[in-house]
Image 1: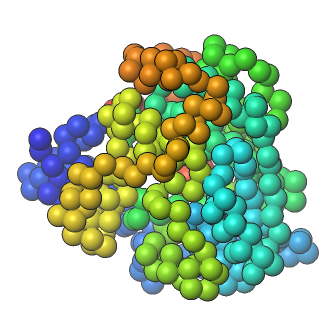
Image 2 (image 1 turned 90 degrees about the horizontal axis):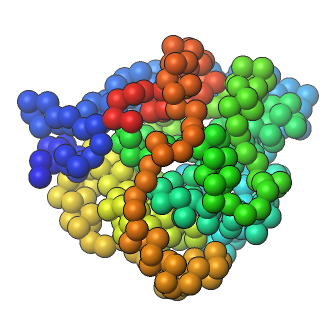
Amino acid sequence: MKICSRCIYDESVPAITFDEKGVCNYCKMVDDLKEQYKTGTPEGERHFFDIVEQIKREGKGKKYDCVVGVSGGTDSSYMVIKAVEWGLRPLAVHYDNTWNTAIATENIRKVLGKLKVDLYTHVVDNKESDDIFRAFFFANVPELDAATDLALAETLYRAADKYNLKYILEGHSFITEGVAPLGNMYFDGGYIRDVHKKFGAMKMKTYPLMDFWSFMKWILVKKIKKIRPLWYINYSKHEARSMLEKDYCWHYYGGHHLENRMTAFNHSVYFPQKFGIDLRNLSLAASARAGFISREEALQEYKTPPYIEPELVDYFKKRLGLTDEIYEKVMKGQRKTYKDYKTYKRRFELLRPMFLILAKANLVPMSFYIKYTSKSGI
């Protein structure tokens, strides 16, 4: 199987192409983003700190001037610490899908407690949350945990709107986390609603669903901007983790996306065993691409099986009320995709020119424009 000569993406990755030197289009995409955002250069940092000063000006007279999502993970913990260092007054925001690990919860408490940063939390009803997860499991689609990602985005917008704030800081880094392959996965509010309608048993009352019109409200009417500082400045996840452990008694949770049990099951068990997808290649490819580790080290680690927390599968089955027989039937059953359900995908594609303008204005992430409005590989 052909493998990129620079990272570890191979020809099984959706929509991948290689140039005459064997470098994949995803490496080139990262290069383009680095050039566009001047990542890690004096020019990129100057531009970002101009944004910081704008946030401060627009936040005068308010208790907070921005919101920052927190999960207890490395990137979000680092982001709220840096926001305070930059002289901002962030409100930390957390969406609790009721599957948090004790380590993640304690990490949030330690970091925010030391910084004296307030926390805004939306806790979904646990039975309702499990009903949505169960619906996606029975739908036989890869996006088992999509409801969490969308709910966090909606919760961030709601918190910003409640306190009349216009900026959301996100701890995402395309340098360390990589670029998700086009077509690998997809989700939106219409997709979540349709899957839940077909396979759910409860009404969504406490789940913060972001449908198309609420999304338009946040970006076009409220004009709340999403800023990703790590797209502009240098960032090392290893150095961030060391600082967190040393200065905040923060504890590592064992791997990327393992701070939440549903996310851990999704990445360590569900993706690999049902769909043959191992998303560790995103961060490992990114680390090799950036030179944090050698390409050979990344390939060697990728060959090892994903870490599975003891009792995780039993916990998943117990929470969702699945017998061993039902669990095995679904895990070995058919594979479907978002194309088998109703989504906003076609609508986003038609509005692609508008979303490019919005991405350049930081009203939607550039990654949203690249992936959600493109027909390539989807």
